[in-house]
Amino acid sequence: MDVPTVTDLLLARAEDHEQGLRFEDETYTWAEHAHLSRSYAATLKADLNWDIPPHVGILADNVPAFSFLLGACAFSGAVLVGLNSTRRGAALKRDIELADCQFVLAEPTYQPLLAGLGIEVCDLDGLDKGKPVDPVPAKFDDLLMLIFTSGTSGDPKAVRCTHGKVAYPGRMLAERFGLSTKDTVYVSMPMFHSNAIMAGWGVGLAAGANIALRRRFSASGFLPDVRKFQVTYANYVGKPLSYVVATPAEPDDADNPLKIVYGNEGATGDLNAFAERFGCKVIDAFGSTEGGIGFSRTDDAPPGSLGRPTEDVAILHPDTGRQCPPAEFDGEGRVTNGEEAIGELVNTTGAGFFAGYYRDPDADADRLRGGQYHTGDLAYADKDGYYYFVGRLGDWLRVDGENLGTAPIERILLRHPKISEVAVYAIPDPKVGDQVMAAIVTTLDEPAEFGSFLAEQPDLGPKQVPSYVRIMRELPQTATFKVIKRHLAAEGLDCDDVIWTRNEYAGS
Image (cartoon, rainbow, N blue to C red; front, side, top):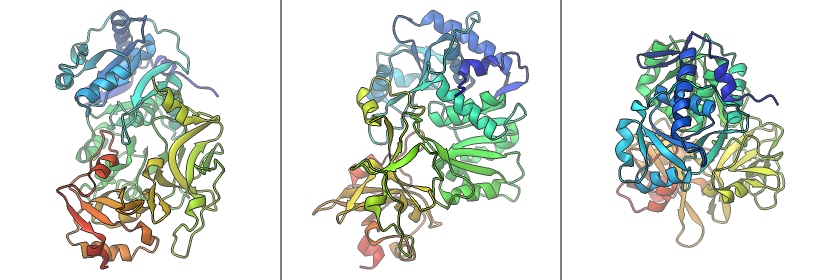
């Protein structure tokens, strides 16, 4: 497999005097980008202690310096550590120390978060630029960046992101979508997360396209930015896509240059609504920060499915390790053999692009078992080989002796036009096992209307009906828009929000 490095991709653009990067009213050519990256590389080579891990943290929004420093790390052999701007205090200090950051480059607005943590802080805006240096040789498996997982189920893990892990999907997606120097790639997801780097920044770099950075994602600012920067490609994650869909529609929304929108975790209804409204193609993929498995939903995939995986992906039963049989369905579309058909998504041939976690051998061992990469994600397959996401292994609910996944319940609840966000999770049953609880963001006023809706869903099994529904203005989320279910589960019924009981809305 021919895997380039980020250094290769940057050097290929070093004499390109066409537009390469835009941010607000700033514009840089690719040649200027490469030059500034070499200048920042000189600063890193001078300021870092190269006898220990040459890791430098960055605490910033999507600003040009973030892009230049990615290039600087590629050129110098340093490692950029993307720090989550929503982390605070001891949690932020823990991330910095786990990643062995020698110092942190921070925008002025974020520097107060580092006060009193005993961490050396440098002003990102005032970073000196040295005399440009020649790039050091780089290999595809050299470490380029540490990106933290979202931390929805515990402390975030630092994922090792190599040159190849950034450059290969960048080039693959650029070629797949036919992107070139005439295109503009819009990056509004936070650059401390993998979606922005591998499905956005790396794609723009590989194509030699113009990269338009948005400081922070804005649903209302999405279409104006697409028109201002003449965006043809954008990356997304599910929740932000739904936020854009929820903005007021205008008759001329499809009057824009957007061609391709690519990402993951999009709800089927949002994918279709976005494509129709903005006149573009939306391609949803399955993947993770770790990169052990990835595949895309195709046009012929049934609604709600992940698509067909590559040949190295299988669904293995978590107890037996054997491949699960296809799901069987009753006349209402409910899975009737879930105990046998639902299993873990596994790369049966190895690690894929998973290069391990930084300083976490136990987590590495949990992912890589028996020469296979275990995602921790649950799924089932239909008879035609299409996969359906069920939830995380930690999301299993044990209700009346039956294992249930949360994702199918969430998909059903999101069918209601007045429900915009859903999280389904387990709370303890007073006798044994779990009860189903759902937190929803909704404009529904009466539990009876909700109950009538549930009664009309033929594929909602009786054990899947929530025992409790918590009405919230917003769900607790990470900076990368993933719901933190452990917070909801820990609070259970002990909260100030309105809670509907099953007796109230089911009429029982």
